[in-house]
Length: 310
Image (cartoon, rainbow, N blue to C red; front, top):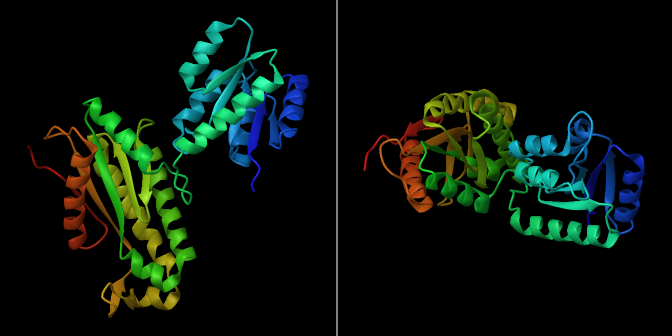
């Protein structure tokens, strides 16, 4: 069984020692950082399951670290418990507002601290439905995020991203190679959103080779073209040289017949609320499915945007 990893962040070595001894006594793996900047570096190195962090620290304080992590789509679900001084109500409020999941008052009772750690880890395990392969938010998070955005009645562009002929590739090259394709696709999508989108954009992994991203309508065209361009450049590298030169692979179709399948491409279907009011996730999904079926029928590395009204 994998031991849960906890990152302890405090500029006082004595406090870190007490926390480390307490947590290791309960079987947790503990990594330490002396300030907020070092904490951000350690998060990338050790991928902790939880951060236990002092509010007041040099370089970056606990509130600032919370804000940075909660803006990162791959880290926003990482639970954070802040340590605050007794009576510092303002620190508690500012920490919670910045995204902290809980707080513990110093000097703390070890039993209470451990109880809060266990509670937060249990709650996070239940709530976090991140895709195990890409670590992107999964279906529960996607549904909640999309419904919340629809409720705000702000301009939205929801893009459904799907690989073409992926089953044939998976059958030919195996699941391990298929997983690498999916992870590469996730990286292309995430990198493109970071470059061409805004911090408010969202990326989720529906499952298999299906992804969804949410952005602003004025940005979606450039994002789609960038994703298609980047995928087209890298797709040939997924294949062995012979298949790459031929430009296709031979595999069984869904009816069990041997057929030639071209190299992998991407299809993107974009649903927006520019010309119609969208109220529910199911409505968006239905429109997206219709658009995706149409664009996939036209051949890959294409995108289509729904321009119909009510």
